[in-house]
Length: 210
Image (cartoon, rainbow, N blue to C red; front, side, top):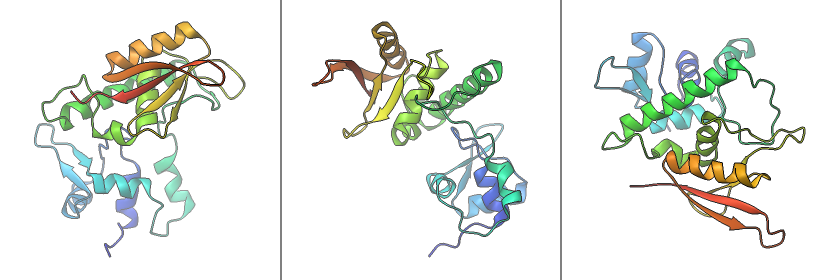
């Protein structure tokens, strides 16, 4: 069984950028993560370090090392999460706008680094394994408004039984069509459907492969 990361290594992993997996730490910490196959050093300048798929799995799992709550809180506090619709919307001002812009730019960089041809106009592996978050980020970054828990109308992105497909709903038909255009520009294949019982329109979106 693989030995779990140390407390210090776990903090570095947990503090990785939630979209790109970019790491920050001492040279010794980063080298140790590379040695264990949890990170890699990018060959191009500035030679930043990023989580490998194994590192991402560690980040998304519950910690296997005992750490005081006071030490772990800073590593997870304020982690960016795309708004999928239906949650509380405590911050919709300039700070949130900057966070979303930064996350989207980070995702484009991840596409450039991980798509074999360096393309940024189609989704990458991370997006295929985080479909709901990826589609929601594309929508929020383009200025679309998510639905709020308080009943505020807007988009909602949800998983579906279909492989590599999410459903996007918005009670405003014009806004729904605008969501389709945004996702298509972001490299998603989109089709419009109607709910069998209600007749309400919704989108099915899948990451484009070529």
